[in-house]
Amino acid sequence: MDLKQFEERKLDHIRHSLDLAHQAQGLSGLEFVQLVHEALPDLDFDEISLTSNCLGVCLKTPFYVAGMTAGHERAFQINRTLALLCQERGWAMGVGSQRRDLELQNGAGLDAWKELRDQVPDLVLFANLGISQVIRADMRDLRRVVDGLRAQALVIHLNALQEVVQPEGTPHFRGSFEAIARVISELGLPVLLKETGCGFSEATLRRISGLRLGAVDLSGLGGTHWGRIEGARAGRGSLHAEVATTFANWGESTVNSVRAAARALPESIEVWASGGVRSGLDAAKLLALGADRIGFAKPALEAALEGAERLRLWMETREFELKTALFCTGSLNCKELQAKEVRILERS
Picture 1 (cartoon, rainbow, N blue to C red):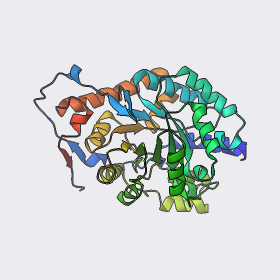
Picture 2: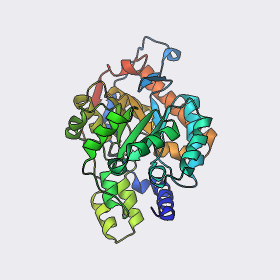
Picture 3: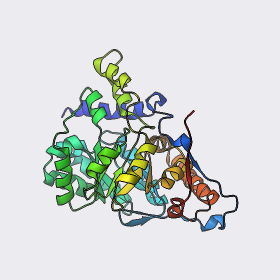
Picture 4: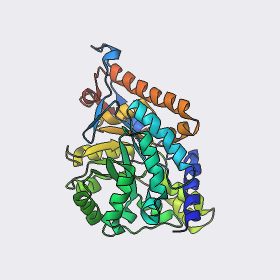
C-alpha cells in the first residue's frame, strides 16, 4: 500500500462528498412517499418514545451515523466529535473503512481507535471493511481489526461501482458470497452488509436472505454517489471520468430498496435505511415502509465539521422532526408508525 496516496485519496473523498454535484438528489424516491395526517391523535407529545433495538441493544433513537471516514490525519477528530455526540444522544455509529488497519498491521491505527473507544465506552460502534479486502483477509486479521475497536459488529461494505470507476480501485468480488458466509460463521459477532449509495435490488436481497446477517444497510441511490466522486477524482476527460458520467444515476433508490427488503428479508435480519436521508420526516417515511434503523452520512459530516455544538443541534432537530411525524400520525413509537397507512404518489 502506498500510504501517502491512500491518505490523499481519503481526504479527496471528504472534499468531494461535500460537493452537491456528487449527490444523487431527487433520486431517493422519498419525495413520492406521503404519511397520512392524523388530525386527532389520542396521545400527548411527551409520551412519544424513539427507543429501538439495535442488534439486541436498546438505544434511545432509531438513528445511526453511517461509516464515512478513516485512514488519514483528520479522521480521528471527525470521528471523535461524532462518537461523543452519538453516545450522548443514543445513536449508533459506524467508522469509515479500516482497510489501512487491516493491511498495515503496524498497530498505530488501532491505537488511535483504542483511544477513541476509551472515551465512548457505551457507544454502539461498528467496524468497517470492504468486501474486496474481506475476501482475501485472514480471520485472525479480521478479529484484530474488530477487537481493536471493541466493535459490536462488523460492517462489510459493498461498492462495486466505486471500485470500477476509482483509478486505484480493486473490483475483485469473486468469492464474495462464500467469504461473507465464512465471516458470519467464524467471527463471533454480528455481521452487516452495507451498500455505499447504489442500493439493493430484490433479487440480491433474496440471494442473501438465507445468510445469518445481523442487518443490511441498504444505502440506496439518492445521497452521496461514489461513482460521481471517483469520476471527479480521475480528472476531466479521462476514461474513468467518462464512465462515471455514464453511470451518474446508477443504482436502486432508497425507497425501492426498503420496499424490496420488506418483501425479501426475514424478520431476523434488521433493515437499515440510508441514502439521501436529510430529515426526521424522511426517516419517518422509511420507518413506515418497514425500515428498523435510519442512517445519516453527509449531513452528519457537515455538522461535525462545524463542531460539537452544531452537531448536537443538528441531531436534536432530526429527533424532534421524527417525534413530530409520530405525533401527527398518531403513533406512540416507531413500531406503531409501521402499522400506519403510507401513500406512494404518482410521478408526474
